[in-house]
Image 1 (cartoon, rainbow, N blue to C red):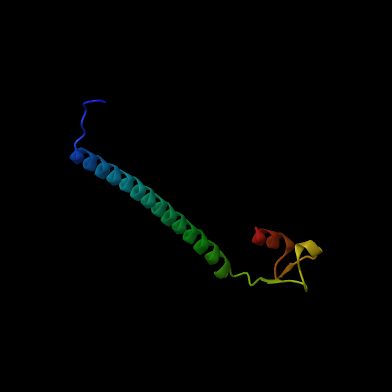
Image 2: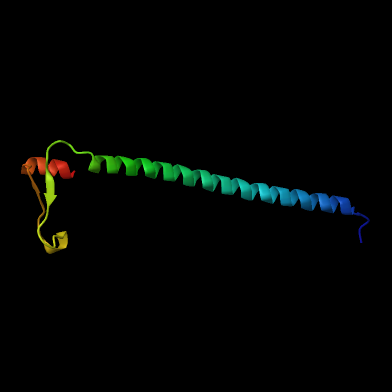
Length: 94
């Protein structure tokens, strides 16, 4: 056999360093996932606020959406907007 002897202190130190390194790696990954998730949620909140703001704030044209009974695109029915011309209704939908 070989005459190289490894002291137990070195084994304990190596194992501790390995555990610290693994813990740091996992903590860094968790931190990155958390920060990406928070960024995504912040972007989604901004988008949702803008969409709700565009829907809920009246534009002053007094137009309202009406639909026929069981209106669905698959059934081939058409929905109309009262109080608006066809040109402005297509602009309002976009």
